[in-house]
Image (cartoon, rainbow, N blue to C red; front, side):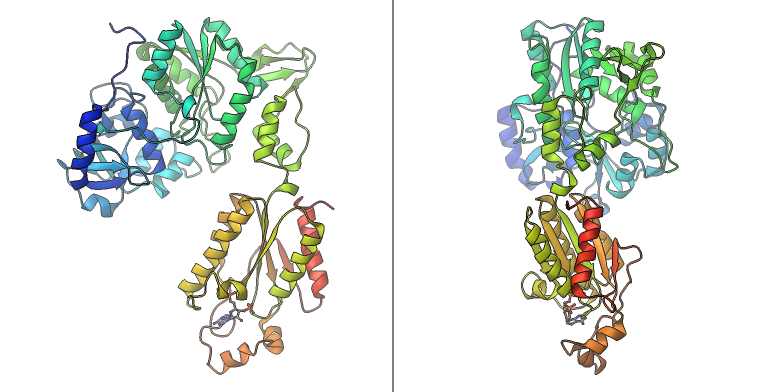
Length: 567
Ligand code: PPS
């Protein structure tokens, strides 16, 4: 029997063969890997997904989906598949080799296609994730991001994906095994996480290491986690900030480039196998391990302790011992953390949920020392400053001549008077003179114009500035798309300047309505082109009864009520 820390087989060829393959692969059809596929490929190649030798074949896929085992009976709970578009699939056939490249076109591997098939995604969702419900991030990915066709076959590794961040903290399974060997560690418990480490996690990891009489590996996922999670750059800074709270002779931090699926029990089992491959002997499974949150009916996808049952049932087969934990909570009278089922009777239990933590960060409210470490809170506040310090976008929409530009200008001046954040005005007319100078007023061109404005506004918002946009933006779907772009980074305030078409035409400041009526300007909004009235904007302004200054002030009041500016 192999020693537990003997090297694990990798799929890489030798350096010399890799150089040759790189040249030869110039003749192959190339597939540009998605970010998730790059994560999967890295773990396939470095042995993290041992014993898989490539992306699942159709027979293995069917078997994994239904029985959590590959066709030869090996325990493997999660489909690792190469999804491609129908157009790409039409260019390749089984028996053919293809090059697998990263997004810059760097070749990472070749793959010999053995299988090409159309998967039943609804069935995959129901069997693997428990429900065909797009509230589940992996099911949403399956239906809306993954290609329609799957390719399967063995992979030949050429080189590992390039990482520019935290290089020194990333370890392959064999690097970790070598480290454990060198340190003489033979009992090591892994803590998997996709969150910053707070005091409850520290207590849990201390207890786990003590219980298992093992060294501790903090093994956070930095590949893909749940949409909306704290980004991995911030998290790693948080981990580094608390590392000195652990004894350095018994604790190690290593980053795992895994793309999580948030698959609850199946995912927990997968994590345990991956940790076994990395040389771990013990694995912590807490409450709701890899849980995706609520389903579309507002209920939990999985029982919070189903993951523990699943790993318990298979730990002997995998060869890793589970260290299970109930939820850790703070007991005020004891000034200490306890598993929820060990809380002394009558004691006061304190806890701060993820939602509450995000609210406190957003509103700049105190985060108590019993909950987290000041160093961690500092890092989180750097990334998520309170709302009054974040960027945002005010998006005016309305007919030509409705008063958008005038109000937007007044708003800009008021915000500049307050100071604190840079303000940029993306006025409809101005944008059309530079950013969109080649565009006309067809639906396609208007959409392009608005998407460009949205892109610039989202960049400004991301960088902590204020973007004020004032185009006509006549189509609801395009406005919604811009909202989505911006809301990744900060607030989006849609302001409908609700001046009626009759009033705009009566004012006709630029004489354009007259020309439109005469048919000299085609596709004119409100006359010969549609305008979708916003159904639920953050604010609707009536310019017919109210002065410009007052309209701008209404926006300021709205921003104040949203916590975006402070009085
Ligand atoms: S859009 O639909 O949002 O892309 O339009 P936008 O870029 O805001 O339009 C800017 C100004 O272009 C003038 N203009 C027209 N508007 C509507 N329809 C047609 N066909 C048209 N042709 C020229 C119009 O004066 C817009 O100015 P504003 O600033 O809205 O008064």
